[in-house]
Image 1 (cartoon, one colour):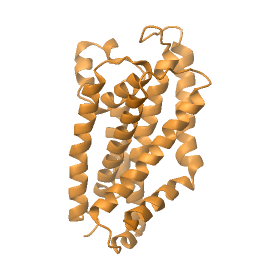
Image 2 (image 1 turned 135 degrees about the vertical axis):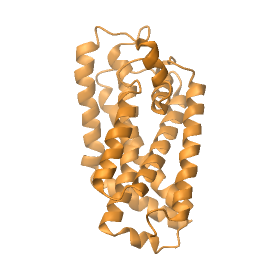
Image 3 (image 1 turned 180 degrees about the vertical axis):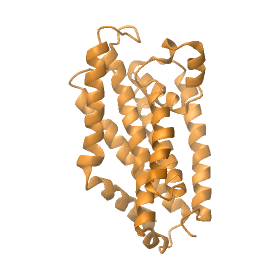
Length: 251
């Protein structure tokens, strides 16, 4: 029981000690996105009745920041440990693959949630958000950060060098995040791109999270939660299998 908790604390301290970089920098990036896009489009775009564009944008930016940082936390920890050779010290412990899973994913969730809370806090000066359904906000924040933490764990196990990790993030995570409705409603897209957007699981995370604030969304929050939950179950099963077999860490 104490084993996974020790590893969890170690992973949390790993990013917390450089919080200016791991938490402060992503919050600043999201704030700059909001200032630029909000300033240009706030008076020209209204996605939901009575909701200004800046207010619409804030939950999307918060979720985007949570997704990217939850992924980065577990993936960067594993790839750094593998390349620097410090992973062997964790391998020497009697921790089960489930303990590894909980510790790495749990710490990724903590970082993602911390960044998301920071984004919502600093943007509160510029847009006052309603909170129509707090339960949906919490549910999607937890499910989304868990999903990205697991995905980062898989990427960290697979990658053998930093450029492979960068390719995974730049060509998979980043495009799927940016094309998930952070800056727009998918209903504003042509029919073909609406269909493509509905194949992107990141869309459901952001749409469901946004529903918790405004009580309005492009699809049902139950559908979004089902898609995110199914994706989380699939990637979790894969990650647990890879950890159990020692994929690229025991050979």
